[in-house]
Image (tube, rainbow, N blue to C red):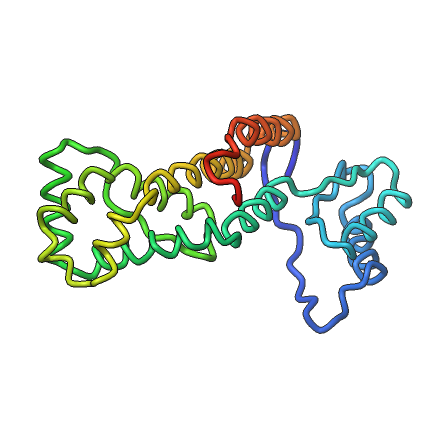
Length: 230
């Protein structure tokens, strides 16, 4: 990426046949630096794996003017993955996906839910599915269920005959389901916003630090009493 935020793809390489040791990665990166020119490179960005960290350290020692920058978006992604893998988040997301999958596959139930949403004047769309390969959808999926809380509760209390999956009604009416979702959503939302902001072309290193600062501030606001285990 240039100072004017223009992006250029210099090279794609298949390194799958080689062991990704720090020494090997250094040779690959050095060839790229040589091809582009050291004076035209200000930083090399990478993830936080041990072998990559060691390679970056060597590159910086060989080329002090080239900054060693860790990918903040990747770090935030790891934080989000840890939250999602934790028992509290994993259990809730599983229930969210059961709800979403059912309403998407049941024409009758989905039609009734859409009718209730319209009658209540709820904006923001319907239920959104969580996809493991796109972790930002975890926040979107959780928020979609929270947004439709009143509609889903009406479905469970007044229209349970169309809920042909026996798991749906107990999930909706389970104790603390929606309150726990709000806790999870409270944590996931700033992570999603941080990554989306860092994916913008105009994002700078300052945005990276600001995103982490906002995330830390958000986590500090989370009362442990809401869910001590989480």
